[in-house]
Amino acid sequence: MQNNRQAIRIWDLPTRLFHWALVACIVGAFVSVKLGGLYMDWHVRFGCTALGLILFRVLWGIIGPRYARFSQFVRGPAAVARYLKGAAAPAGHNPLGALSVLALLLVIGFQATSGLFTTDDIMTQGPLFGHVSEATAALMTSWHKLNEWVIIGLIALHLLAVAWYAAVHRKRMVRAIITGDVDAKDLPAGTPPAQDGLAVWLRALLLGACVTALVLWIQSLEVVADMSFS
Ligand code: HEM
Ligand code: HEM
Image (tube, rainbow, N blue to C red; front, side, top):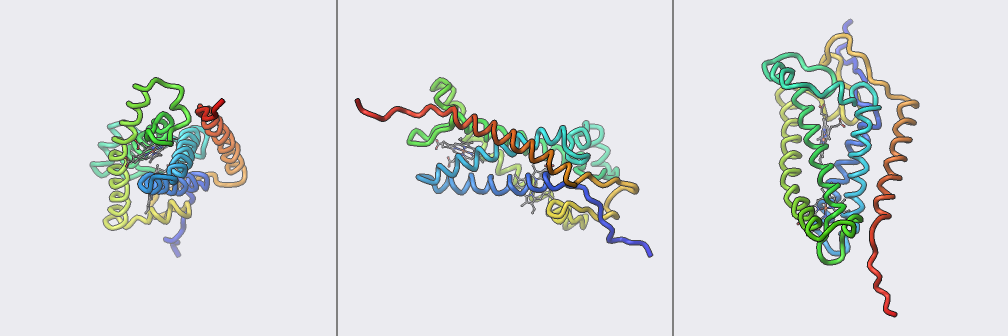
């Protein structure tokens, strides 16, 4: 009997953990900044964690397993056009979806980086605020605020795309980004599974530790005003 329910591992565990941790950080950064006041400390924590996650994902796109690699899913305009004309989707991100993944990484990466130089002119500032001129900090702060709408737009598009593939193409993509597995019937014949075992997880842990150290170092660069009176 043909096994239609057979599933193939496409998204490795570190990529899935990255995705859901990023979702938590973006939601956390938005909620905390809207609450304001003392919650701004949480905004900085969520924002700096998002920065670490984006750095992790960019490097994971180079040293991660097959379907996480940029070389696997970033395709030129010709491949996008062929896909739009109905060419079969490869395993992993399709050529169009890849564009939205790149846009999300770029725009969220920019948000987290600009946040490092941003100030609310009250008591919260990014750790690199004191290292640039007032004009640069003001520019970064206004870009940080403007970029909010680009992020909201891209996330709305992302969610609409996921809903469209589920409703129209009956693709269980949400299950895939949770469990890592895609139904074999939705993949080209002979699709090899992604590596997703101890060696991959240890590589991700090592990378995660390096990225965490880098973000903690950036945070340590904050210039703390001397409020003592002599
Ligand atoms: C703050 C909200 C979100 C952000 C910033 C976000 C961002 C991303 C990013 C960057 C990727 C690429 C994953 C990678 O290759 O590393 C991705 C993929 C994906 N996301 Fe999200 N996501 C969000 C919310 C959600 C939600 C709520 C769902 C499900 C309901 C979802 C479903 C998916 C799916 C199914 C994929 C895989 C797409 C594919 O197969 O090409 N995302 N998302
Ligand atoms: C990807 C992560 C981030 C997101 C999604 C994000 C989002 C936002 C948004 C939407 C605002 C504007 C709020 C408003 O005007 O209502 C804001 C303001 C702010 N953000 Fe972020 N942010 C992120 C990362 C960071 C980081 C890493 C820092 C600092 C380390 C930071 C520091 C600030 C500060 C100080 C403000 C206040 C600006 C003001 O009120 O003039 N943000 N952020």
